[in-house]
Length: 292
Image 1 (cartoon, rainbow, N blue to C red):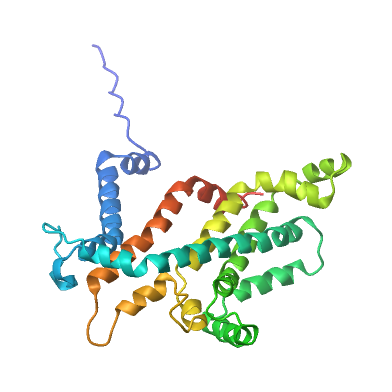
Image 2 (tube, rainbow, N blue to C red):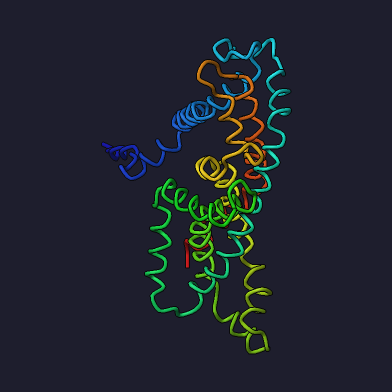
């Protein structure tokens, strides 16, 4: 009489293995992809509708089609004719504000990051609080000062005002990166004969390119999209950024929606191109000081 050994039970998946397999299953990956596509489509739909409305015939955005089968470029022609000078003004102001913000914020951030400054924590707290002040408060204070100094309705006045929007943010971004910069490198350069200014210019700045680009681009975008400062500090028609040009199209009785949407599309191009061209630098600069 022979006896057979009982069959060994089939291997079962432990509870620890089941979630891993389920998370990596094709079905779950497909669901996550579909959800991501839907969310991206929802976020980009206003941009698509802006482009579609800019091509609507007759200047009526209510007649805009989901797919413009009969596009009309009249809105773009009027936008370029009316807003060309305003776009150039916005470009000059935004570039100037970004450069001025970097010139002021970079040495300040380096000093706060590398030098043992007493009360540096209080200074950073003040910088952070300055970003929470309502813009209308700063604009009204600048209007009084500008009126006395003759800076109303001037490009340098707008550059100086818009730079105040980017300086606090630039200090925080650049300081976070420079705080992780090894002090031994600067000390070695000083032993070789470099002073603080030469070490800062020749060693620290070239390594901090990502942080500088990130801070500069955001300062540019702050100035490019500014409306409150421009509305408060310009009282005539000679100096008007494109944000005020858009505002001029909106009237009490009628609104030129095709020109509004066309101007908005044209004004979005520099920001989009800038973000696409510098996306690698922005990602590196924004996380450069995350790990010390």
